Image (cartoon, rainbow, N blue to C red):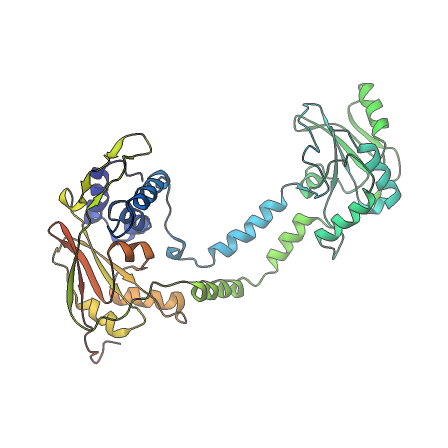
Length: 410
């Protein structure tokens, strides 16, 4: 959603009056952005306000909800594992390969499948012949068993010593799979995604070039000795590792890390009832433009968004680690009965984790979100529990002393 005018912002808030609670999830991630754009506290420098607001305007399109709203806390872990498979399915250019290794000449690409099973002397000869030929690609399937990639790179650097320029060498297990290569050496001439010529048991690029010059095409068969591939299939290895993973344990570890690392916006508990008015009026030091070029606010103009539209929200801010504060916010009521109530927790019990959050939402019969630094600053929140709502053309922050616990409240 892109806010292109104040009317668009008003529609954003009014939409909540006719939506079910679930529909709020897509919008809550933008509350901080909207508050930052329209309700910057006057205590901040105006230039900072302009710069920050302009950045938000430019970045607002396509914003997604924050990660802490995800109901699947190990989603990032799974996504990372999937990313590993995806990356393994792409060629890995070795560190010894120059950036210009394979030029985009448009010529057919001679792909030679190699392995350390060929022997170091044969490999060195292949490297020397391939040096300087921009239509040649040397392909390995992966590292040797129990060998890590840095070890493979180190072995190759020894063989590539004094060879300049270094030939193009990649680790590409998907190419082995695509052309069903099970022994080495094998050369496949790739042309427009197809194999125009292939041969096994040949390491001489000049021999292959002579056959190409003679117009030979198709599978020429075997012309020499072939060997088993000494290296593992890197892609299959990653798949096997993923299949062997203890996912329940990984899930629990991801959950634990989330709550251990989560930073909370902790506020002290209020000791007396107090109402504070917050003026949201801002003065623009420069013109503020929308991404489409429309003028939103002219330089020097003082704007109070509440003069033209209703806030439409009632924020209940509390410390979810304190049962007395939970009891208090359950008893608070908003003056505007049509306002949408949002529960914002300054912190949650870390040990309880997601189960604790679910229990809290069941108790309040509503979603609970974590208070962010931007929202805390924009509404000048100082103590909790507090209720934030509109009063005329101002925002009122109502700090309330906690109520005493009663039997059955826990």
